Image (cartoon, rainbow, N blue to C red):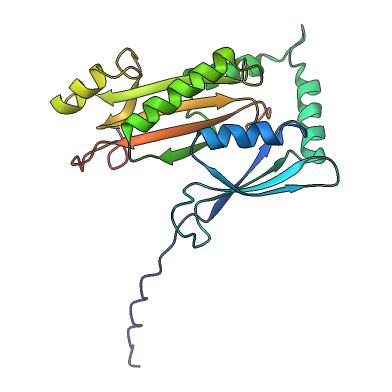
Length: 227
């Protein structure tokens, strides 16, 4: 029997089309959209729903013609999910004297590493934009009634070893004083943790991650992980 090799398959381009996020409280759609706009997203659809909540479509970059990619769909946490989270919290005694010890361990893990669970990473081409955006969020967290107590900020700087990168980050108003480092070199991470969105085992919070990679360094956080 003659065996004929099948022709190699042509390369097929694949990208991430969209993600779907839920804001926790049905009346906080505008607040959730406002936070995403600070993070650089643009609202392209805002649809009021019969239950009083709102459905949104957002783009990560509205200046680029969309090919059904870079999209966030956002809606209120469904009632079935709210009921499930309520049952989990009730069963584990969350916030009560008989709280299951697994809850404290879970929260401790979250607090020590913002990448511990599900999170949304956004690659940004400007370090200055990240510094400015985090400064805006810090001001909102301190003075805006809607955001006060609702967002927590954290950042990781690149591991040392590249003189130009080290000098730039030492002078940074955001990364200059942080003791935390990335899992790699020549890149930074800025984290925005918020309870406006629902995610994780308890549905309590979601983390957005702003990433920047210094140009000219093929050896970086996204090409080589260092633990």
